[in-house]
Image 1 (cartoon, rainbow, N blue to C red):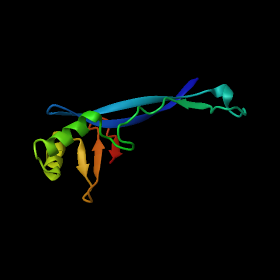
Image 2 (cartoon, rainbow, N blue to C red; image 1 turned 180 degrees about the horizontal axis):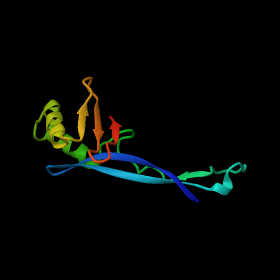
Image 3 (cartoon, rainbow, N blue to C red; image 1 turned 45 degrees about the vertical axis):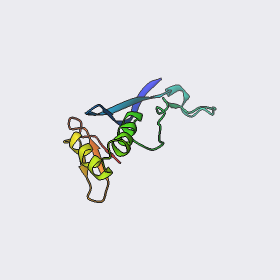
Image 4 (cartoon, rainbow, N blue to C red; image 1 turned 120 degrees about the horizontal axis):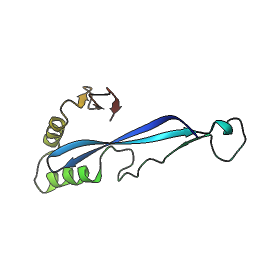
Length: 114
């Protein structure tokens, strides 16, 4: 099979006071001999997306545990957690002014929307 591209997915994680972006790169492969043939499978294959605790979310289990602990144990309001979170990702997050965020990698200029 010939590699024709890749799919990239990202998740957000917090480890103690360290914030990081976990990037999963899933290569795409195509079978040049399979093109135009009627078969059960597709000519393009890609690995499945890693399972997520909350579907369609960028948050990992560690980030969710951090948010819930800060909210219900440490009594930190969500708006203050948001400010702390954005400071931790300084240089990697842009706000769009409407409550949404763009997460981007400074080196590759890759942008993913949340």
